[in-house]
Length: 241
Image (tube, rainbow, N blue to C red; front, side, top):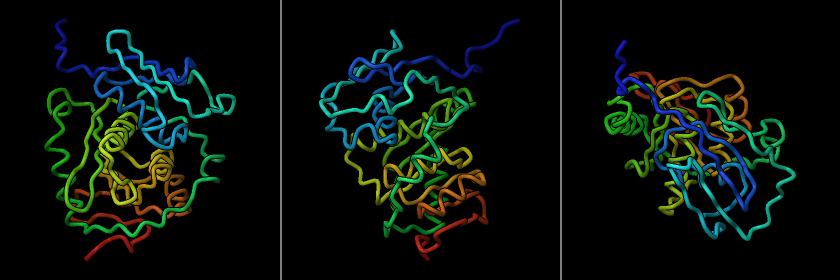
């Protein structure tokens, strides 16, 4: 049997160490590893800014990412050495973290027509998906253009990569939205809330727990965003005419 490598999704274990402590093992593609680590640590509240990190280096060959910070980290409160498979969520503690996450009060708005246009552009740019398929794509956009975009075999990894890249570029996440190819689950909603992102749009739909959390946290949710009849689940005040 001859199976082409073009029909296989890359999924490799990559370990993240912070101040010598193993934080997590990502099961991910090997692109944008520094962005992945930054987005993951920021969206989990380990750091508050890229400037909290003193050093960060990623090695594809060794499958490791090393970061250091002088910021005090409560490692005892973290679930260390977790393996995040490409199909699971970010590892966020839903009940504890969601209860302490502030409600989003951003006045950012965007039209459904613009969301559809940006979603189409995101799909057109998704080179890994077009080449091998089986990939998720996430993008950070304002109400004019796509600001960052990343792909990964796991949607939570793709989200962390896009967020991390946006942080490196100094993007104000409170005036931006997250575009997704996958379903909107509670872990993705919590990740958006932790970076103050007010809008999530996806070609798919939202889960019941994701909807409950988005309502509590004041996040606008747009499902079926590439269709002629998108679903605005919550917080319609951010949908411009």
